[in-house]
Image (tube, rainbow, N blue to C red; front, side, top):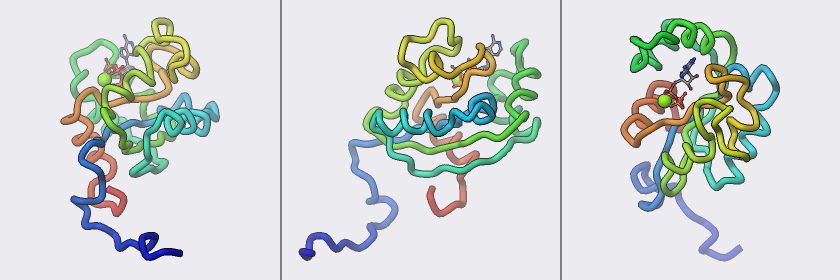
Length: 156
Ligand code: ATP
Ligand code: MG
């Protein structure tokens, strides 16, 4: 092995290239219970995203409501809280160039009936509510949502 193959860990703020950035996702209860999380993670990795942090957990209805607080005035809010706390979810922080926009493209439209062929929601979502996966809609929300699940952990 040559010297160049040995490297010391970099300080956290130098760990990642300046050209990459992060998004946050979670595989939702419908996809986890259907046994589709492995296939979904494979699609995510094959699309060039690197998994920075991952775990399996379950939200309470209150925590699910907090996560989707932006939708608290929408008619579907209560159903959404119930659905999102109905089973296990798999939250992840992902890294890639242009991560937020590229990931939204990979997952497809909210309503699977309108999602493009080959997107995760087209392949795996059951309905507009039980739509398999979440993706942050801005760099700022990616940061907030990643912290919601991973603040204080080694990976983050
Ligand atoms: P997400 O934020 O989960 O990535 P999104 O950004 O595509 O989804 P939002 O408008 O933020 O869509 O809605 C959040 C979630 O609320 C949706 O993913 C879906 O689970 C649920 N939802 C949205 N619209 C409806 C609706 N009309 N009826 C039922 N559930 C809905
Ligand atoms: Mg959204």
